[in-house]
Image 1 (cartoon, rainbow, N blue to C red):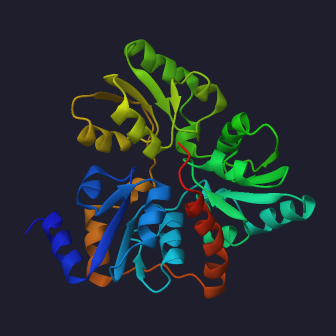
Image 2 (image 1 turned 30 degrees about the horizontal axis):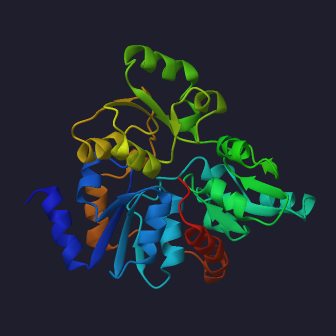
Image 3 (image 1 turned 30 degrees about the vertical axis):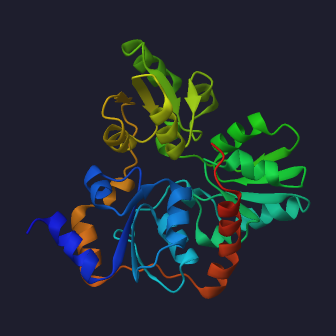
Length: 302
């Protein structure tokens, strides 16, 4: 029996569902029950009927699944797969910002720990960050932890003061304009589609700026044939599967190493032992659930 067959057998035996992010290895995406972005995965996690959720993504994603499903067993195959941007935001710093700006509302990117979410008013993803900020009835917004995404939101929200936390995604921040221009020179007929976690100077030269799920929808509906993809390279696996008649070019070095920590072997072991499980104290879960639910109620923006 192949490892893939073993995973499929165990999934049925354990009454498990496998959720995988768009940046997961192709072999993980191919066996998942659902593949998507942070918002899509959160929505899917909230609807799960299975006894066990195996979450193939970085730590904050598995935490969100547990927060939305406190009565389910949530397994994260590789606890060391931690989001470096989420680690840049801490509760103490967030509380200090709130104290300095008591009239501000806190919008937190879903790429944050459960402890930080418990101190937020509402969460957002890259697909609905603009929509979330626009929905607030305040003139001042504390936006954490992605400064690049916050600056992107500020382009569309002119009537609010944005107080930005100095965090970033190392994978997207490393996609400099020189890499985009080089790819464009090599593929002049291709549209440049980049993620809003990229730096402002990259966004300035892109043809479109979309979340990963936004990229999927944009490319599906586009009449163009070639695309330069300014995000983590594994999204291209899904794009190729869904658009076999189109051509995609990745940006060299656009790799999230922590996403790659999860392997077929680690998923097999997680299903065999139903561990390591995600454990969050009840008070934190209760406080973090509200901003996540508000995020899902607001829905997609792009």
